[in-house]
Image (cartoon, rainbow, N blue to C red; front, side):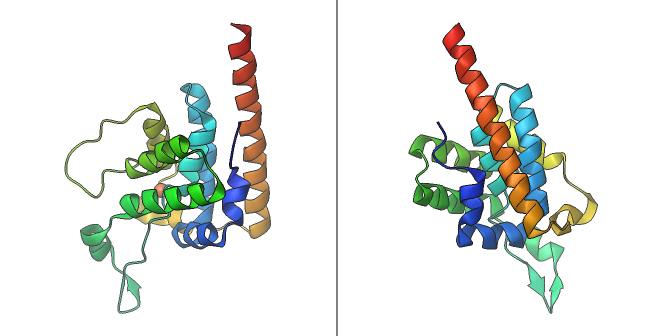
Length: 178
Ligand SMILES: [Fe+2]
């Protein structure tokens, strides 16, 4: 059973603010990608779509003299760390199961290795979220600037919620039958 839906998350003003700052269209596309990759890789689509939707909510806007400064961003960015913490806080506030909230937060923490030197040894859920993000990346970070209307966003999240519900009930049915 899902304790929290993508639609519930989007209702939170705190979530909406950070989703829009990092690019709502990108977040929704990555959540949709994560749904398909999760099904292909036998990963829980509920956890994957939530982590994917929230993966970039830790972004800060690195401006210098009124202009986006990529060097400042590269030097100072910790968006995966901040995002993991913010996502955890909002999921717990919404009533998420604490074990799921932790898995989602850690998947956000490991969706990129941009903030440290070394390699991440990802589990299947973390890999699905990273792949879903990479599949929507555009040169120069343009994926963060794609636009989606409020109405399209609300209906895309509700469609995705339904797909996740279907997958979870299909998985439950299958488990009962074996
Ligand atoms: Fe991203």
